[in-house]
Length: 438
Image 1 (cartoon, rainbow, N blue to C red):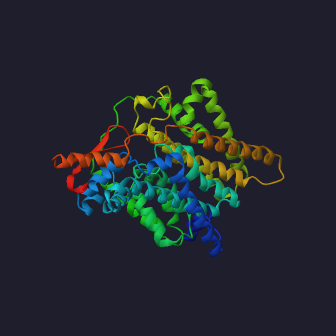
Image 2: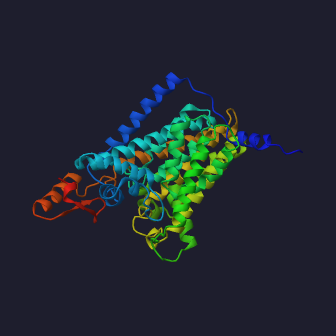
Image 3: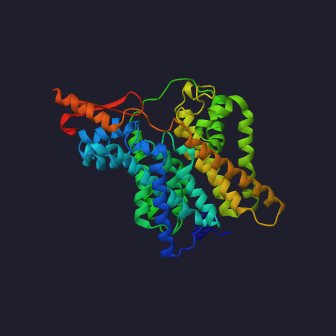
């Protein structure tokens, strides 16, 4: 067979199909309503409401203080933890322009807006793979309502990169996306997280297809991020020896189990049920995935395998690169330490599950099995969401931002030149000149 340039294009088109163009008026109306509903959910649930008056971790002690103390260009290009954080630092620059009383609410609102946009990207891009609109809506909704994403990572820029990874995944697969805004999104994502390197193969495949602006922008961002990481040192979290068995158990608990229960409930279920809990979660996930491999077309099967692989790669990489004894499954609260590691892997797992559910044809005995699996998965997720509302841990109850600011202003009134601003989680603080809090 004679090899031509058309052959790679044909292969790329078979695994990254082009979705139909929607009716724009109805599409924009529906997307706008979904965006507002997502924003309201993230900000007005009990845990979300508490974020409006509580600043979280690096949002204050790294990004805001650097925005206040450093020139803009220096702040945006300053590595932290061994890599660039372009998008969080851009948000911090915006928040720094606002009255300092609005800092906590500013970060929370910006993080919620960006996460809602990621959900919209998921809905729009998945049209090429999921024929069922309700299925696409449910998958996109998980970006917003999944309990794993609404505790440690809720409404803060410090942990948004876990959602950015999933958003960039779908943005690269979205062949008829609006070119400029999506290109800007993927380049900012690439400049905000080293995890984006796992998506490089998708970007390379997209180079064989028309509308190359998005993958080129993404690869350019990866190049800059890679050069930064090459010349920047990273302080490891721990020097504890990695235990492969513990990594395996922790991975299984943090992805299939957390996907169906939420992180908080694992601490209740795992000691009582042991590894049977893991086996049950694997079986529930396996039924639609196996069905998708049997009934799906080439694009569906490829997406299913890629999403499943990313789920495994991301959770294992996060645990291995950041391993410490508190990540063991026997540790107190089981998977609540570094709960953020579960988010992107769970979303990738649900992508594989939804592809399988959508690909199974009607009027087959397998449809009965997969249909039952669909109802079971929906039931488990809904129960986990309801249960998450009753958990006290996600609601921040530490020092409110206005109280922290009042204390800092009292220090300045007493004659100090710099003020200490305390925020969440416990024992986090940063120092700014008194001029910044007046």
